[in-house]
Image (cartoon, rainbow, N blue to C red; front, top):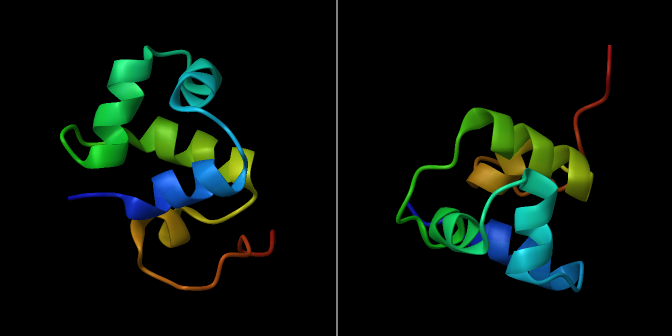
Length: 73
């Protein structure tokens, strides 16, 4: 599965793959594989990226087109 929105969010934020890899504390190549769908993204990384970009995990996964995060209860 390719996560096109990971790449789109990164580009919109004007960040490099290396910068996002730093956020996740992993190597750039590992992050590149997440972005291209070569490697499944772990849940912890998905949650961390959603918080970093201020969006929902569902948006990153392509389950919704609504970019805003869900309201907290």
